[in-house]
Length: 240
Image (cartoon, rainbow, N blue to C red; front, side):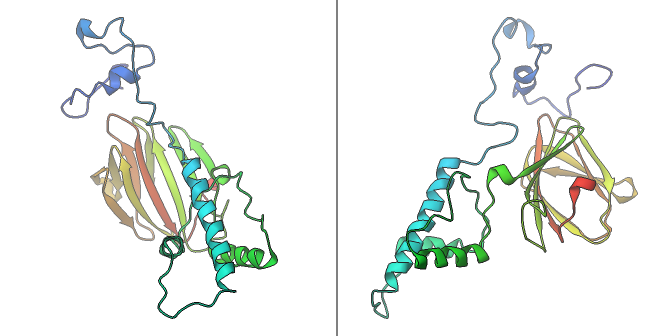
């Protein structure tokens, strides 16, 4: 918005997003949209939610794997016996942080042996439920602290999902003892760099900022801009 009027960045692609999203129907396309209902895809919310049902299935699979491992301890194995599909999936995903349904009780076990296996698993794999993801807001910016000192024991890295509303700006700043990697997920933005330089940053792009590198970002697109930020070592963004 400039002087109270909408301004398009570049050539209009006729996606009708501005017409459909205007809360007071101030934007029209001639008489064709007047007195017509508006529609926004309900499957594309501002802050996408993690699929709980799928997450619970993953946790259930891990429980089944642990039970399978417990049984294998009492059953002789042949040297060339192939791993089951569950074991292959589990070991392929080892080390990754997976979202889970908070209603799943990871401490529920059926035997002392199984409990030991779960305890051992938790020492190497850290699960973070949606309810443990802290959300920070500042002006037109939403920051979802997916993996941070607020909910994780990770000492070397933090993972953040940032949503910038239309026209939102994250002013230029530096981190003296941390570097960041940004991965653009959705939308179009402009990177704000040192010496007043700027650079286009669109969905699919990746950029790395070393320690003391000046960087900022502005949503210059026609919709919300979303990107992931990897910070190492972690920074306490609650005080930023």
